[in-house]
Image 1 (cartoon, rainbow, N blue to C red):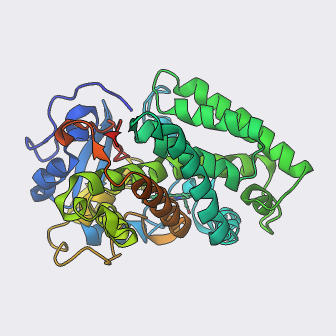
Image 2: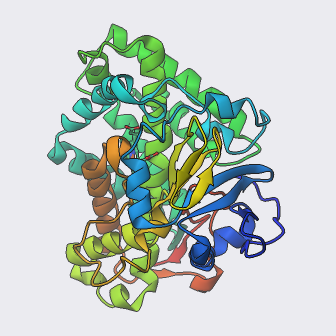
Amino acid sequence: MTTETPPTTAGQGSPHEPVPMYGTDFAADPRQVYDENRPRGTAVPVELAPGVEATLILGYDAALEVLRDPGSFPKDGRAWEKTVADDCPVKPVMAYRPSCLYADGERHARLRSALQDPLGRIDVIDLRRHVEETADSLIESLAVRGEADLVGEYARVLVASVFTRLFGCPPELAERVILALSRIIDVEQAAEANMMLTEALADLVLLKRREPGPDVASWMMAHPARLTDQEMMDSIALFFGFGTEPQHSLIANGLRLLLTDDRFAGDLSGGNLAIEDALDEILWTDPPLANLGFSFPVRDTDFAGTRLPADRPVLVSFAAANTDPSRAAGSRVGNRAHLAWGAGPHTCPAKRPARLIATVAIERLLDRFPDMEVAIDPAELRWRPGPFHRSLTALPVRF
Ligand code: HEM
């Protein structure tokens, strides 16, 4: 998001001083920021971008309470939107779109069912094969070089290719979608890339209306929810926008842990078990969507000893809730009570395919390059600034 430098990350001054969640300090060590601010309460004032105030929920129980109460914490932020500038860097994520992420009640249930049912139709054997084939061909192209950036040259490309296959994009359309997705991350190119993605997805909707096939886009179209073309577009955009980002971060964050943490690093040949354990650990400690679950109370609300003003966004810190000291006891391995997939009505509908894609992507790479190592001092790895994601800028390795 923005790289503007905030005054401080701690926000320990007055109890009302907002904690900046932008800039490189927050990106470098968000955990420290959560921990330093826990004494202020479970709901703390934050700034998502310069001048854009919100409340961040840090505690596990409070997070569940917010996520499970859409009546008090609705998702439609159109009143808030009027108060922020058009070029506000968090607006593209939080501004209302007619897709399920921004809807509540019956409308949410209808739009969500048109995503969830098609996701449930994905054949896991086919999906595994898709991911294996995509991973293997990428790995072969990297093998001759002996070095690679696993974020830009592996995780991102793999996820974009798998998604376009799931959606039945013919090669030319897939290329346009993949190019747009690769540029969307760059603030300078984001607007143009967004336009490119929108146009490519519009063409995909037209194509699937004409020639449906055995793919997620066609299943969405045939769903009894009877999505309009606009709803189809926004729902597919949500899939790509909200699916690909956390998906490649899960792969990259998992690889980083496996390659740099002694608890896992000695065990790369141990195969699947080490990978599953590493993914569990990431979902607890470095969830790819670190802070989201945004809502916009329509009236002033008293919550956990804090007054939440009407129309000021409330975000849930899945990362802080997962590491809430009052809850974080015992082993994390095999324990899936974390909030990395959210909770309540908007919980991620793609947990199973997402986890499978990450497992297979990591497995193929480590099988092929068991001696792979991070090419720089792991302390030098950098995280993308911004309040929402926990995402490496690059993961350079040699093998
Ligand atoms: C195949 C890949 C993925 C797809 C297609 C996907 C899709 C979606 C969609 C459509 C939603 C909105 C659901 C609703 O509003 O009812 C959602 C929510 C969510 N997803 Fe995923 N997702 C994927 C991967 C991931 C990954 C890897 C993570 C992180 C581990 C993740 C974490 C979340 C979270 C935390 C939410 C809740 C957001 C909120 O409450 O605001 N997703 N996902």
